[in-house]
Image 1 (cartoon, rainbow, N blue to C red):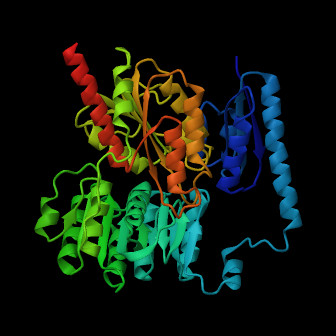
Image 2 (image 1 turned 45 degrees about the vertical axis):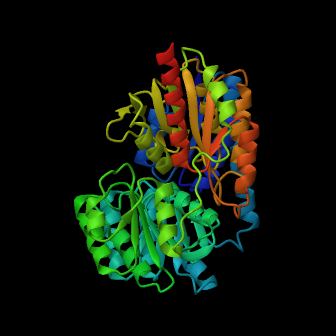
Image 3 (image 1 turned 90 degrees about the vertical axis):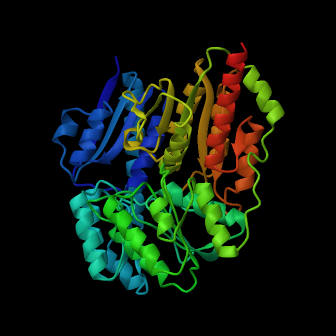
Length: 518
């Protein structure tokens, strides 16, 4: 029987990055089943409960209390884990005492140091984030809300206040922006150029901006809005304000919009915006097939993120992208591997750290594979009831809350993702494992190496691994180096997430042909 114990620190706050480090380090201890470190907000208490990490101490904790909860296989492992957590807490306490005279602890103090600042990036518990956002807006700062767990009502109020002040609120849960060449949160190092980007999807922004850079065409701005912005409750406040900024920017020659399909009222606003500007507008609404209203308004579209980036490039430069589908794929080797698959190997498992990339691949693959299950299903996809166990053809967004409770996002620390990759690759029913490798600011130092090691752990498997790398040569992890590491590990690396999904289609078609011939 497993053991559970909890550390409660009353009226104590630590930032989420440090808490994720505690969770990650404690989880590495042999015998630890699950560990999480979070503030005891009501939502986080629910997450503790769902992760089987709750007890009476957790239930009685107050929202200003810090909670570290550990479940281990035995008492010895549990005590080692709690000691490690206390050791990390002690070290940061000592550092704070040493640095207390130099550390900036308030927004007001920060503004005294840098009076020219015009953007405030907020990453703290949602209960506190909204108050910091209001303070920032009242000090004339644009807001990037990396924090989530902010109610729709609070988001609406913040964005209405920002609009009145001619400022913007990017977020909540805004994972990526590039403002005046400065990457914020998860973002890639891309060149300057004539294309302005507005996106309600984090890795969607990363994919199009990275592709544009690799085509040799940079951007002016890339504004993230947060995923709820184009929904009816928020009605596209940030999206429309950001589009106006790009419209009025003389350096922006083309406008690119990336989002899940917006609600009807926001779609109408986008259509009116397209009609109001002479600048070409290219849109991608993930999973959408009907763009007739966009075309009638004079706009352009791409059915994939890759196609959208290529269309924006064409409009900005007057040139077509030199394009070769499946460039770099060794089909002689691939066809042999397909032929060697066992009759039991017939399913696809997609393990993604990027939610937008997962969504795009799912939207493409569901056209020719059924049934598909997912923890974040789109229309026509079934809900996966138990996220700990894949069934049939499964798509997982490992960055979703149910996987990241009290843990680092898999783009920061790919441990959770790689453990799942090992499990899927070793499943005798799996023919294809599809994954992403996202590099850039905020991401792991060497995600390709982590994926390669996970594959080598199950080197006897015959499952075919397909991937794409989201990033650029300018990123410190270096795009071509990441591709090389994956290919050396036996992974078939496509040039984009969309091409990776199409390569899976090729493999399924080959399997179908072999079955019919048999």
